[in-house]
Image 1 (tube, one colour):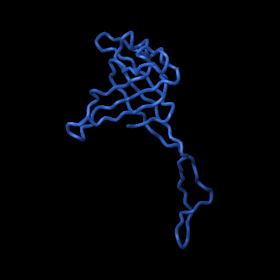
Image 2 (cartoon, rainbow, N blue to C red):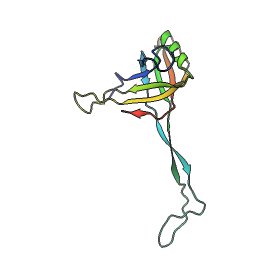
Image 3 (tube, rainbow, N blue to C red):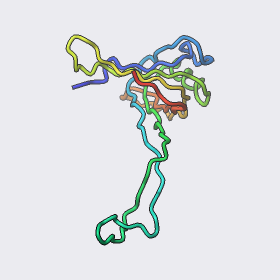
Image 4 (cartoon, rainbow, N blue to C red):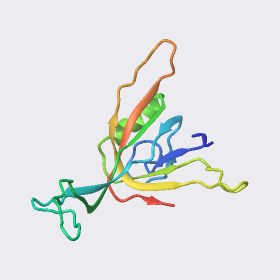
Length: 156
């Protein structure tokens, strides 16, 4: 069983929301994040008179045919971190600004005992959304946010 313990998310903003290209700094108080979904684009290649290719007598084939376009889309990274004023201000400063390098590191998947096996995902992206922060009397406060993947991610 893998838990999310020791997973990290970093961005090259020197930890302040400053310009891209600074020191790569992990978000403090990170609670959750997901790896982006990868989806291959498709197009409908159904022909009006297509047949099922049967021999010796082909029959009409009413099934839709989808083919890949060759383009892939990486879904948004949804994440959540503990509320602090510094975390909130950092996310707000990063919102809507392109060119940052995000680094997501998964926890050890424990396939090799004694040797950490972590996946590192690196991509250029931007904070698309800093969601509403809810302050409740008895529940911990967290900041939900969303990161868009702008260029092909690298996995190592």
